[in-house]
Image 1 (tube, rainbow, N blue to C red):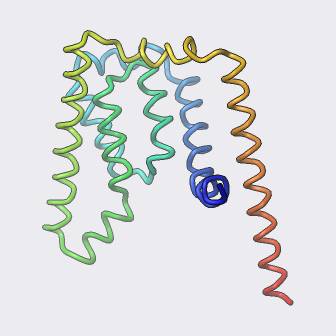
Image 2: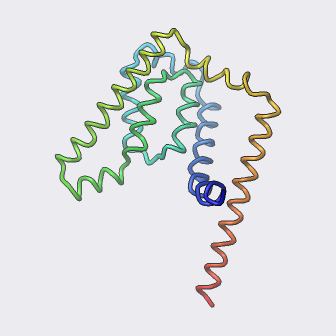
Length: 183
């Protein structure tokens, strides 16, 4: 319990909240039919998400709500998966470290394998959706129908309280540490 509601919650709270805010902005700003083109040109949309995910410093915790918001707006699930796989696996800092510690050849191999595997899994997910005649936006939108509204609100309130309490505890520890250093 201490690990789950203390250490783990503290580790994921910041990227989670950032991801929720970015997902909310995507949901608010992007028009609903913006990614209709992405479904017609799935390879192009996967390449765009790969290009967006590789240099971006995003962890799995914050990229998940972003990908869900993009799917709600109409992005094909394969392209969202490419973003989910490539984003956390790479970023500008990792690219620089791999190049400096190993060499440019190792960096090219590293990025190529991430790109190839992400694209392959993206195509596989899109194939599964097409084979089963599923619409990802309908599946994502159905979650609100399955879970009662009161339970959704309760979960949001509990999560907000847990994140707030965790933030207060971390702030107190930081203040205590600074007092001890100055004493």
